[in-house]
Length: 114
Length: 111
Image 1 (cartoon, rainbow over the protein chains, first blue to last red):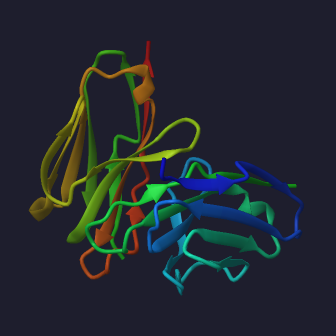
Image 2: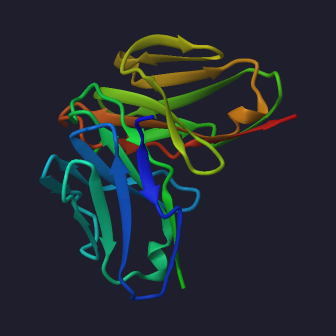
């Protein structure tokens, strides 16, 4: 089945130690998104790629970076995780980023910072 | 930016009961979707509904764009309906790549 896959499902890192979360998709969608969802809060968009074009939300901290080496894969890099970065990180895709499209979400990676 | 409110914040139901969840938004929208997040964190799209009414089994949704609200109806609720229901919108001046999520309604269906 075509889907959005996130690995690992749970990630533990140490304060200040760089960590990378991965997302892959078999839907062949042009747009990939990364959301951060803290406990009991709504998902918040960090950035998205339209093909290779990177779009950063204005309030996304510089500590968060992303890479999209090809259509199928997208990575979220947290350069120096702080305790406040502990959250669920959700990857999503959409066909072409148009105004009438749905977004398809992966199962998420729950990040714990010690 | 566009503001999204959802009510009620929490809802507890007995299995078999019906419920209505509401989403209010502050500006015109090009896209509105309802999502269900299950207890394991998976977000599932329920409806794409910027206007009008749709039904899918026990769920239905209505959006009145001119009055800036949307309703999600759950009939004959089941324990598997538990989780958080989010309304997400894209504002009229965006090209559809910036969803804003409401705070969600946490639903607990008791057996």
